[in-house]
Length: 153
Ligand code: FES
Image 1 (tube, rainbow, N blue to C red):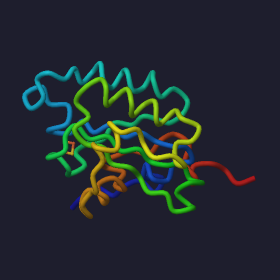
Image 2 (spheres, rainbow, N blue to C red; image 1 turned 90 degrees about the horizontal axis):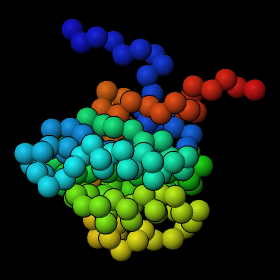
Image 3 (tube, rainbow, N blue to C red; image 1 turned 60 degrees about the horizontal axis):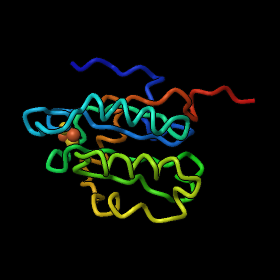
């Protein structure tokens, strides 16, 4: 029998703020699959470059390995409530794409302007299974501030 998940386990999709999810499953982050990518440096760069604009979380496999390395930009709660969907970006395997992606995340007009060209050409539509993985706390643990983790005032 599978262990029960704690009642407080929440998805990254419950976060109040924007979230950047960097997949580091079996294919994303693999030196064998992507020998020219310095995955540790990429993740460190993303954390520093995004700063306070979003939480950066590391996921297990999002079931989109054919697009590795996968990064998903999840809007904050306000934008999600008005229907903005997460943006899935694939083949983030060079510094130029990574740089454009983090610059876009930091932009004050993030969801009101189209993503930069390099990000746009790397976006893809996730499968239903991939969307399910994104919402699964076992794949992507919640960020610190979630709608359900804060006390009501
Ligand atoms: S390892 Fe990233 S989608 Fe599978």
